[in-house]
Image (cartoon, rainbow, N blue to C red; front, side, top):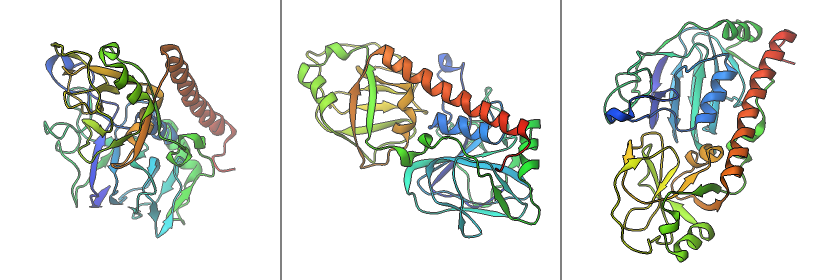
Length: 336
């Protein structure tokens, strides 16, 4: 693939760099884990293949060989030959075809998965780009104009799907089958983010607890892959405490001394020393990372059991997608 125009922040990411946090190496990886996973499933990938993550303004890409692709996550108005193409479904693209992205109509992060995945060297068992350290991905940085990327050899399932969709007389062919629409950011109604109380929840004043669950918080422009910073009611502890830094996770909500909450994300540090008011439910990670600066959210407290139930339902849905694709392939038809 040749990157004609790179877009705003386009990087190569996989599920992340696990097993090295004790050495101070962050996990990194994709922001929208569900969009990434489902994208790989839709193109027949069955491992931790690398995809392209794009933010707000997507790239312009020329395919130099036939490929099987899908686009998941936020809707950045992808087009081929000036025609809008649909998200959350496999698409055959012929060599020479150019994929472009336009305005951001829902969400803000999209993923381009390719059958076989993007071929870049693994660094500490991951192909994810960690830009601050300059490791992983393509030369440890965001993609630039005229970068050329190789594709890994597609697996058996990818080849099978490609064979069913391929039409050399057409620049592209979309499957009329897609994953369930609830994964689309367009389906989201209110920005309600569910959480379970964090380790220091009880140390915050009652007013702060009530404000966190009852008032709106706005995402600020000072947000990035490391963490989303919100402004709203000032959250305060009942009394000043001295804390020792300890492990944090994707979705941990810290509150620094100025009282504004921060949700830690893919490029989070390995440990943090601010009090943790909440932990976002895993089922709502995708909703969080698709927020744009200026958007407002409300936080809803749920129990551990409810969070676990939501997570199980989400995982069951992913399994259903995998089973649905297997059934389609056994039936011998991917369109119709």
